[in-house]
Length: 449
Image 1 (cartoon, rainbow, N blue to C red):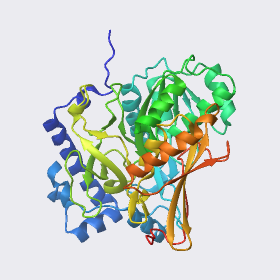
Image 2: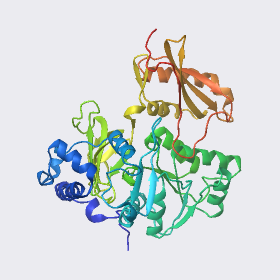
Image 3: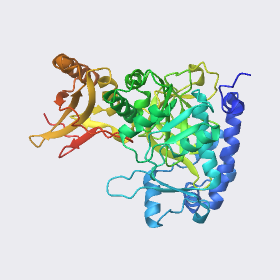
């Protein structure tokens, strides 16, 4: 008997008009519950002049106000520790997680109930099953299991599927490589950056990853999972297929995943979310094929209703039929393309770290890299890319540096981007989200020449 490629065949292949009706029904229920149980949402809706009875279909979502991270953080600061967004008493919760904070501010604190936690694991099952993971797989998590949500839900999702789960907790990188090898793990879950780090360590230890048992990698936490050059590098290093996923602490789980057909993007789990794409400046919706900011409404979390939350993620939505897998869920082409607030303004030119990575990863001679910004003569922004040279490619460095500098300049409106060679193993390595931008400018955005 063949196994369905879909975790939930009914909704994953539902006709679009039926999916819209389902989303409209769930939106009505969500707004009614949030209005009646969350002081934060009631006040926000009242100020916008919207009542639950005004929301009767999917199209009515535009009548609801946006929720912002700043408003949520301010509310938690004024009503510590959890704020007024909670829709259940805090003693109903079984899980506590935090986001990464912004400069000078505490992180967001979120709670989940037993119902929430079952839902969180369920959505990870969409992703794992959709990429071909099955109950007989051995799944390794390169994850530290702190208060950051990370792969927590994925761990429980794979247990629900019946997989053998290998948590690695506070193990170091060599120890993780040994465990992957000794237990014949068939699936590895990591950030794209740390997947590369594990691969480098395996090579140093004389372990043949392409000849090993790992057949699939589930990537999350960074845009690199959908950057073709970065993904190709991971797949070549491991001799395995890699799939991108994306989630966020604010919703507790993932909202998109890449299926086995690898369409160059991630399917949105539309039976559990409404995902809008807007112009980040005007707040107006953008069309298919236009980049904008993703706005998420989540149906599944009972402790914290999240309605029209401005994620600050940059995405480009395309229709579901861009993939041949048969799902009717729309796709974010290229996954998460970056962050609205990640853009670097260098002498009047907009520079995106993701775009730099997409070019740098085309060069096999580059091992690790860092984007460095500083102020020259107190008035002029400068940018360089510091690169470690991969062992065995040292004699190629001068030619690579010249070509890389030209490619980066052409991709960034002729901006002069310097290429610097860094000593081997001198640049930071990351287990969780990579932070490859070091900004030492005095006045950011200075454009004097």
